[in-house]
Image (cartoon, rainbow, N blue to C red; front, side, top):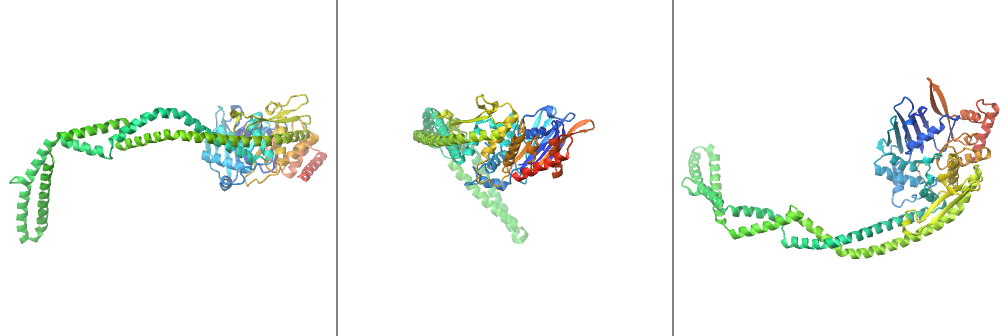
Length: 598
């Protein structure tokens, strides 16, 4: 529900801030006062095309922002919980639209996907158009694309009266509306889920068939690679150990010379380190017998002599262990060559070679099991296709019955809305070929209308008059909204906007339009631009749009009217510029009559 709209530097609007409410919100004013500009500005928030021409002369940019009450995060969470019962409910009078529960769920998913957060259950949507034609959009203070605004728009509201905003032209929307009227939401959900399962299984089977030939070609290579790696019987860390052994075998003479010299210096020479340490230790011990202060030095020398002796024994053992072994060197060289060859082919380390082997084994296993998997998938695809066809044909039958009822109802509604000669036809065409299958079923749904006698019914987008189109939308919404609602949840209602709905209407037809707008406003927020006092009398909240001249420039202003001011405005609509006492009395009667009909 739109709770606030701020428009700055937009055409003749310098700055307007309007607070809207639940129920029926009507905008009135003299012709050319700028009433439709408010609707046009809201259209930009819904992703409408922006143009530099709308920027007020002398300003560098126009800015539109809207605050929508969409429910709290907790309410969203309840609508998306597994097993929630409200997922298929709809708002009366909102054809092709998700109702509060469904809208809340879809909106929650969209906001979660885009990382946009609500603030106190409200969503801020902004649009800025620069004088050079560039524009930017923000949702929840985060930059977004106009495409995202268009994706978000159906979850917030709907505008009728401008061809570029009319989603009723879309076959999918008409199909959803027919399902809502028929009360077939659960069946439609079954069809949609069945189609997705069938498509997933079909896609997997297609991928399996597509990749099977390639995998068969690779299986010989995988087999060779597996045999080659397994034959090597590699061990973790083996390459490092062999590298060290090769260095030793290649340098036996040098190692013997160096280790021998160290052994001699440490032990064998008459003046070896060990001999000198023993002499020093003996002398210091003699000193320590006289002076205790040197005991620590004596102890250190004793330990040093022991360490030198152990090192000498170690060197002697090492010298005994090393010897030239050409045959072993050849074996080491050959083994390292095998490992290096495998590293060049399968990975720079033994661990990565092992990973490559695991992948080859998995590939071979997949090839071996693909035949069984293919048979299982073919059976699953056939089963899912049969289940989908059964559900889709059942839904199609329900739609055809609903179409027979909805068409005459809409035609009757249009008769009351000054389109008494209009003929409405709703066609449901069942297409059995798989190419025509979709999440909405196997039907092509088309709403056709012939506004005048002698004309063939045509799609809604062929209607030339914006006023006629708005009345068709109003009639459709009124008919769909006539069935009971099974639970709407706590989410805020959608915003329905009507412009030019009263074009070419007067007298009793105007009253009928007002009644239907009032009826819609019980389950959705309605914002409507009107020129007729009969419609204005039904308003829950009445706004006056006027133009003023300030410092030689035209400025539009929007004011929410008090009860007294509302009487004067409806009186002006009845009598013209001079508001007579009779006009005021008539205005009061209109308002009283409308209140009695509520």
